[in-house]
Length: 403
Length: 231
Ligand SMILES: Nc1ncnc2c1ncn2[C@@H]1O[C@H](COP(=O)(O)OP(=O)(O)OP(=O)(O)O)[C@@H](O)[C@H]1O
Ligand SMILES: [Mg+2]
Image (cartoon, rainbow over all chains, first blue to last red; front, side):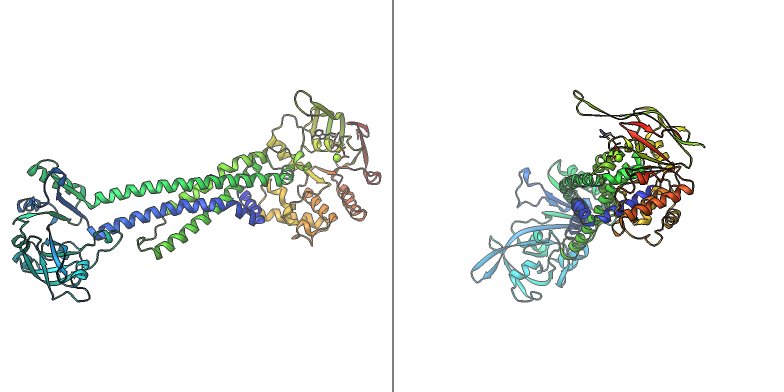
């Protein structure tokens, strides 16, 4: 007998009991739905995390002094010579400098704000910075230490509520008493994505030499922080190692912290993997319950169809064929459940991609679909074995006598 | 005349109950029976005399506890479950009192069922099933479900299902037991016709006038043949 006949018979028998079949496979539908959705959501989440990180930080390496090593924050231990030493690597070096300043929010009331020294044309060097209005100060303006500034989105709102800041003069005060008047030439876009909120702060960007010459806490030729923007095709891990080697050669071990965006991504990815494993376990549990449901309905079916089994045996069905029939029925049942589960998951994922901004891309890989269907078929096979064995073992005479 | 069924000293003992206190029922106590090609035999006897048991053994649905049995010249002792199933499928057609049609299948597909287990391709199956249904006068009921048929029609579908196998032996256990007299007459006429066409038929019955239509009456009493064991 052709096994396809058994498939056809399985469909007929399940279709004959539509409602009951559907209720029986509900557990499988939910289980497979969970498996599929969880795997795909995990993949979509890690894609989202990666994209967001790249949007705010690009492919970069960050160098900063290790404050744990007993240094104080007002020393600027990264020097021009260090920057020069890094020029051999496939990176653009963006030295930065931070200092505290204040602005007058109301007459007589001062609030603090971050004053950050950067090279000119920052958006050109590091495309994660985008200009919303006006322009960034040029490299020439930066080198010359002109009194110009670009404001972060937050800073623009704080300093110039309800006014276009471009062209205005921002007045800043150093806590120790100096005063700084900067002409605002541009405003940056707020950072985007999941990490946007974390990195959005009130910051005034100004040329580095200007800060050196006005802030009492900075010294010419010294920086707080380096962003090394990787050239296209450069290997982040490789370059990180080289950077570390250069700093260790100059200052000894452990004085500087060197991190790449990819190392952040690795951490986020491993969190995602743990999350996926956890969700997979939950899905597995519902599949177990669903499988027991399938076993139950198949046992009921075998009992109900005792006379049918007896008749089939009288007509020449071997025990093997009867076993095959019921196994196939169980597998078809769970496979139908699997298809419904995957379809349901696909629907949910489409919906999530369309509505939740964090999930930008819809991911449902063929591997995931295949895995989910294989899992559902295996559940049918596993939980169908016992009912099918019971059917195959029925004595035809007793089965025909069965009332 | 070649013998289809040759039995010598067939016994069947049922054991029931726990191992400590088993009850033995001797359903058959040494049956010698021979049925020739083309014979029409009625199997009669009081209730519990072992008629159904004997029929199941003849049809290889059950195995005897002792004795020897040849079906169509072939000894059946020691045959595997799969071999017995194959012989049932190819040589034995059953007709039961309770029809045993699958309720979700149409008449046509019910009749085609034995051919599924013979590996006959679908189109050919349905062609043969249609011919069998036409031969029992149900050519206009092919797509009816069993629930849409009368008792007599159901039994004719069951006979068509046996005929489609083109068996050496047609076994019927009280085929008119669930039917009114008019339907019974139709079914019995059908068996008469099959007999005239040369089929070998064994029919279990309680009714003397049904038995009278057969060539030979075999009477069972207490698991033994009281009359008509040899041709
Ligand atoms: N599975 C079984 N276990 C125990 N005893 C059985 C079993 N099957 C049949 N018997 C016994 O074997 C004997 C013969 O039964 P069988 O069904 O062959 O009788 P029968 O002649 O067909 O009766 P009826 O005319 O009522 O159908 C009976 O006494 C019955 O109780
Ligand atoms: Mg009986």
